[in-house]
Length: 119
Image (tube, rainbow, N blue to C red):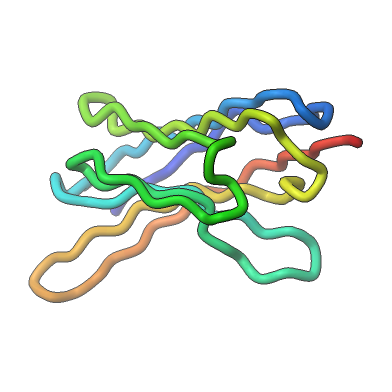
């Protein structure tokens, strides 16, 4: 099993910055993808950004140029630096880790952290 613990959420004014962290522990396969998803009230959960264990990144169009995802493989930790925040970034942010073993995908989720951007 894999456990994910998020931290860093909170309230920020529009245009401000926030940094989320997610530490993974447990039985972690070396080759994996870690990422951040978010879910706003009444909306579906959506991918914000993801990063492979090799460092390749992927971003939602809505956050490109504003958010940066990074990871420390030695610490099994992923970060999301959120700059130039907007009220529409308000959501519960969830950390995700997934890996493939023997052709089967395993997904793990954090408990979520609230991010609120005030206008």
